[in-house]
Amino acid sequence: MSSRPPISPRSSSGGSGPSASVTRMILSPLLRVLRKLNIPLPTHIPTSPSHLLTPFVLALTAALQRLDLSVDPRQTLAKLSKHRWTISNTFPLAFMAVCALFSLYIMVVPFAFKLALPLLYATALLVPATSQFFLPATPVFAWLITFFTARFIPSAHRPTIHVALLPALESVLYGANISDLQTRYTNPILDVIAWLPYGVLHFALPFLVAIILWTLGPRGSIQYWGRAFGFMNLLGVLTQLVLPCAAPWYEIIHGLTPANYAMPGSPGGLLRIDRVFHSSGYANTFGAAPLVFGAFPSLHSGCAVMEALFLSHFFPQLKALYWSYVGVLWWATMYLSHHYLIDLTGGASLSVLIFYLFMPETFKDSDQIQFESGRGEEGYEMVNETELDLDEEIRKLEESGEGECV
Image (tube, rainbow, N blue to C red; front, side):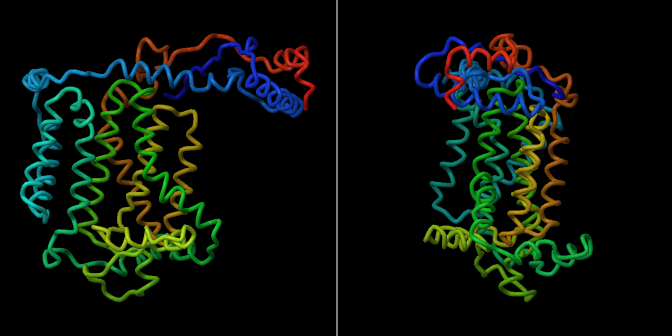
């Protein structure tokens, strides 16, 4: 939504104990400094750290109470019988089924394993308790199986690997090889700063965004997230299979010599992280990657942009934070020599396309999104209507005698 009433706290004037004393000791000088600097501040500020999590705890409790704990498959079959099949809702399912069946067909594993996967998945869809999680995540599963079975596609049936295409396009479109410029200067501190978004947050944030949407978002937002996030990655992997391109690390190691599918992958700048931790984790992981020549589009960029789009649409108060993360991740991917700038813009463009293509009608007008009822007007419970007056809080602290501790 474009605007949302801020969360109001309960009064903490009655707090007691060591934690309350420490809070006042820290709060008093801070409030003094802020008042003297005349910095504009929001008036609804929690006076107790525990209140910061109150809206999320209430939302999580409400979300858990909405869970369907039934294990009767007849409920799922009854819903399925009432489902209205249309081209718009059938085509995505058929597309994912084709990708999954092809992946199972080429997968070089025991036949019993091939048979067990669809049977277990069908069972999970039939049981209501598990279906509520597995059904929205179907596009994600389709992406994962397509990605991890790409290694089994025979090299003879794969397209030619493009080595010079991306650096040439980057030079033409941007006037220089921007990604190459980012790798000219490195040091251990920058290595760690780049590793955190690229190697840690990239894998953790999709789950965090899903939890936020499930608890605090409007009804249906988590299903929308599963479709958009899954299809963005699935289409990205299919593009990488049809248009295989070498990453910047290949140019650094091999120049513009032709590549072949027998070549192992490289961790690029993440090799320096292996050295920091005295391990070979990234070298082994990227050396055995199922899709070595999948530089374009960048799914790191696609995931970051998709996360920023969702959070900006439903929780717009921290837009600057979301898009700052995208900027840092873009820099990190080029600094670690894993993507060209054109890969990043390609991944971002794919995310924007999928985000708006899959957006339900009820979410298209951000000012009209209906958040959960029963948890406050905007999808969370207002703790109370008391505003925090900075001068009043300082007066209370001074009267208590604890405001002079610092």
